[in-house]
Image 1: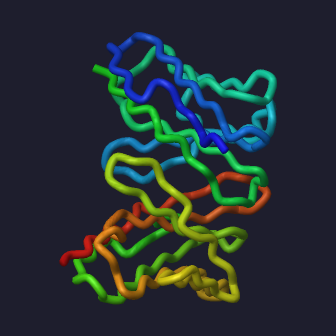
Image 2 (image 1 turned 90 degrees about the vertical axis):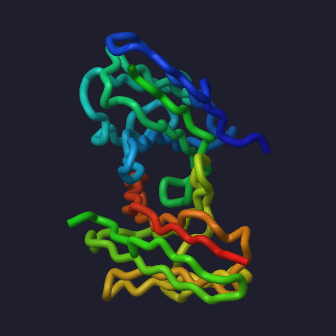
Length: 113
Length: 110
């Protein structure tokens, strides 16, 4: 079974630019999550999709972040325009049931300079 | 106060030692509990779910005390390969969203 795949693995962009992160969950997993770890802090929730619907986006920092999951398969997370404080590791995870433990992707390390 | 609090660590133990990690959570509505393991610069990986009755997987034993809102992980006969950061994670069940602790770092030395 293929795991959760994230692309790119690393991204270095300048402040003010746009970056789009992609996540392909495990096939058949309706639940898809985005989390973020900024340096020195714990992993924090950004949002949760059930199929193509946003179940909970309470963790999204501000309106510079836009997540989509068209068709209920892969998801994208766009940051526009990027700020220095957006630097960190963005993890995507998926699960069959919302109450299950997650399978994480390997993450995208975003550096905004 | 953080919603999930873990022993700050780090824990440095010799091979073969038994080590225990503690975690407390503040939201009594929490329904699902997990321990994840995270190696340096890698993604977290699910180690085990934690049930009220306690559960064991080989050298690893997890316990949950709902009354005290306390979770523990016991590792027996530590191996060098157990060196990692252990994350306590609490989920409100059907809400999906999980809250992570800061993690406790374990180093097992020869």
